[in-house]
Image (cartoon, rainbow, N blue to C red; front, side, top):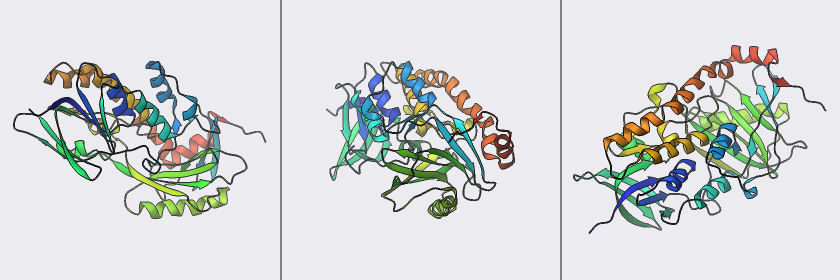
Length: 354
């Protein structure tokens, strides 16, 4: 007799790992393409834990291990408007961390009762005539198949689950490009950069354990050329890059309206960025990933039914409203005239004493 899992979770980032940890009374299989080996995890992420994500960890009564933290811990962000040359510093309460170690730590919290397959690249998903889902994946150069009563897409911005079952769902997206360099700056810093010539989103830099990271979110067309042009512009602002040690890239979503959230239906659930649950202003998604996973875990019943989707949608209403509301912050960040007005006013900025 074929084994049928109650839930198959695809992706073990913050969303998938949190759901795998919290789901109760279900037989669960997790499929994750990452291996957590050197070179096996390369996601363009500045690795800064925002206050919303810190609050999410606090709500779960989780304490961040020291091994996840990196030096230095930064207390201000240098904000730069490239066309005007305006610079301001703003106090921020981020935790500088190693993103790979953070995800691995969340992975270690998954109970032993949950079956986890690493290095498992899902290639195909289909719904059988009996209502079960058939998931095909490659692992160690071999093809495998798993059956499930429910499928959860926790597989990020380029979610195969979402593309397979909800092909008409479209949401604004960018390509995040990031490079690592040996740190050459005498004073480490974190920066947020706006350059509308290259992107209507933003770019970032952060110092981390002897390295300097620079990245940004760009329109897909000519994204790498835009990235390189920005690097050249930043030389006159004191940015020192040198020879890149590694380059990372991935798709990132940026919801623009209520219709950009897709939670799933008919036994298919989406959580985290796969559901479009990411801040349109900052692109922060760890907090929404963890909270949406918690809400889905609470919504799942002993057997699949339509009520699970209704419970999950109701539970996520507040989260969706919060993210939808962040759109009203965007003009003051991304509309050049309004951004410069805010920066020139000095509102909420701090003066750096040297």
